[in-house]
Length: 261
Image (cartoon, rainbow, N blue to C red; front, side):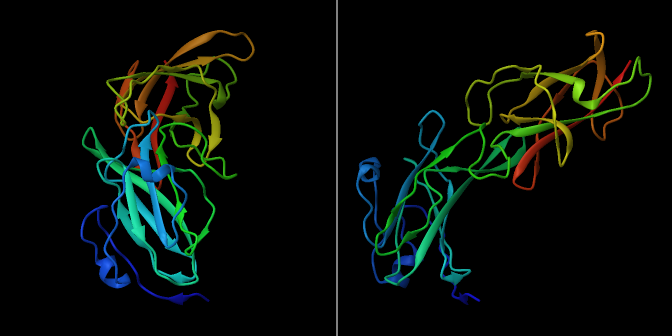
């Protein structure tokens, strides 16, 4: 069992951190040039950017000591997206993860960030770990998860024109304004849903506000049927709906009900 040692710090790069008193050193500062240099012993550093390469301020960077339980160093990226911290002079190995939290249309969302490496590093060698905020794409690892959200549909089995399958539902999702990272969204249309923990869903949809309509494409005749649609939990069906994502654990989702007219 790992020994428990608390070493928890929250601060911005360049600010006076409690960590400096703990380690007996002044907090370091960094700029973009530092990130192209080789790792420095007993220092962890990196930069956080979005998919366009622009700096992300206020990202939460968690530096975890694998030797001790509950011994995280927690930092925030500065306005240049940079973070930096000294590490204790102990024979420990460390791993780094990061997330960003943003408000969007009155709701709060938290996103895991893509690391430049998931490998651990020895404190004596130091480490450079950069992060990218991606709104789409597959996450590292083999768990089949994506950085984008999912849009789940539940097809009501009433007024059916034929034998139907949930995976023949097709959505057209038109962005209403920019995406959460400020980038311009694109229409998402015609993608086949897959089965997920939330039911049948279109996966890896970049988070934004969408105007959504639905159709059903017959696998036998090829005929396309318009479907009525509503948000799960709302009262009335309509020909289209405007929807925001909801935070669900470490993912985001929209839940929809659809039916034949």
